[in-house]
Amino acid sequence: MTMTAVTPFHSRQNPPLPKNWEQLFAAVLSDARMSGTAFGTVVLHVAPESAIGGPLALVKTGDMIILDTAARKLELDVPAEEIERRRKAFVPPKPAFERGYGKLYIDHVTQADKGVDFDFLKGSSGTPPSKFSF
Image (cartoon, rainbow, N blue to C red; front, side, top):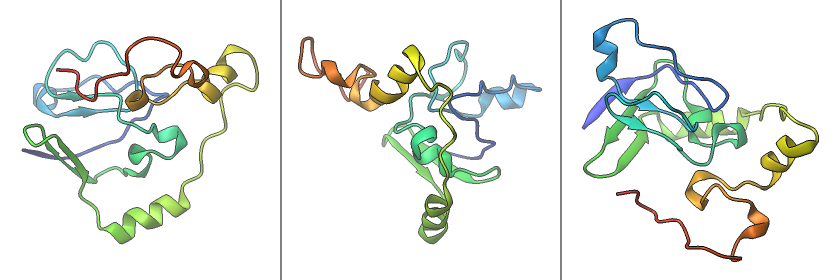
């Protein structure tokens, strides 16, 4: 089990590159789709995304996160009352697009745990996404 203080970065930001070797052993947690994260423990596609109020939107710098890969557990180690206070105070960011494909994507592409596909194609074809990638 790993427990680490974090500096959060969200779907519209790339994580900063490590400044020293010790940081290479810290876990990377993100709701983003990223490349170049081929070192250490990496948890991507946390859903729902922070932009719509997902769990990473509630993380503050210095918060402790419990990651137990064997038990498939990812938990923000903050009192429930504080999490609820943060949830009530959350204000979603202004959408980056007001029209075009960007707007279509924002409005109709499902979250990672639902397959990252257009919602209007659900049930049309293909195999539902597996809960586990291994």
